[in-house]
Image (cartoon, rainbow, N blue to C red; front, side, top):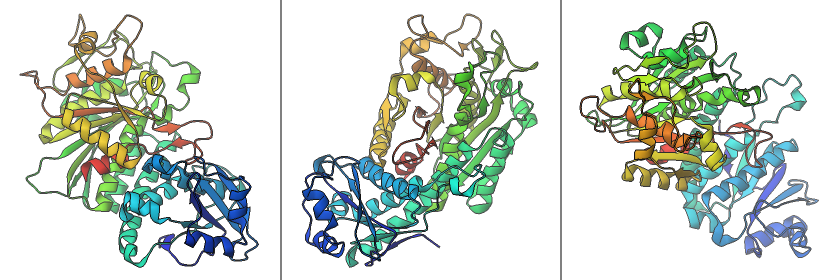
Length: 503
């Protein structure tokens, strides 16, 4: 049973009222204010609350049915975006859960529904609330230390003519938040548990939950038979067996070529023999977020019943030091016979992806998009609020950028080009797994993307085998205490953008 509903009754542990900067109370809001003993108007008159972006004011109403009101600022009306709205909703939920309140109600202004459309804003509101309410705290032994579960969220001021669209959007938002929170849960799971086999079993469970998804898993023997020398080269240092996970959702016409999504699934990255310093090894459980992202996208597509054909490829393994680890100066052979000189075993993600990009060709895809926590260089360039987007396909770039804007996620285009392609050429193999432009390790995100691009081409002709884009996930998790609108750990970035893109 859903915890979300529309209501004319504002009874709740706490009532959330989003307000713009310098906003005057509408007629409906004045009625609310009177019900709450004038608490809202007093806060505005005293300028204790001015509606600035994410500003909050907590009011006590004296009303037994709704004893508390949380005012949340939206900033200036002209600047409101989907991203800003979702942050305000998320921040409200996080703040009220922090006070142990479980029954919430939220006022939806007509300005909001008219700006974004009823169904869209319903979907985004439920999605923001669902993502904000999630906490990875199941390993806390004291129950009181865990975040309380939100039991109900009622939406007020939804008129009769809007209710059907709101209900539809609300249902879609809940399906999306379920898929994204599953992705976050997998990524947050400790690496002792989140092994390649565990990830494969998680994909198989989703296949059982949604019969429209076919899941198959290639083990070490099958990968060896296919000649996946780069994938297996990375995996050979770990005691844990690698898994090449394939999820197929064919919701479109049989004649329609599929979109293939490729996700990096390094379940823990020590750096291999090119061992990371200890400070940089923390959070390396998140190195499978590319795989988790494409898994979550397929789950969401099935839940929403998208009429699209989608294939997800997830090479999953650990990158560990050991007696059998691959080494700097090794030459690994990709499944198409392309050779790679190893300059650094910590540049492993591109190696497992290159076999997946070659494997994708068997589907004769409409397009291929890969997701990977690929380079620290991208995070240095963009921080952790945007992810890097690479492609030579202008149509894909334009559509992906627009999709990210529609959902409130943020992509930023970074360059591909001749200088980056030249930088990865090897004297002893076809390409090297590391390269730089300028001699000091510069342009690491672009040279990594150029490496992947090499494997999207036909062996015989050197021409592109399919339209391709690469997303370097530099904003896929938050450290510390997270953000005011979402808690720390994996944040599920990319799934919303992909669903918007596919739909």
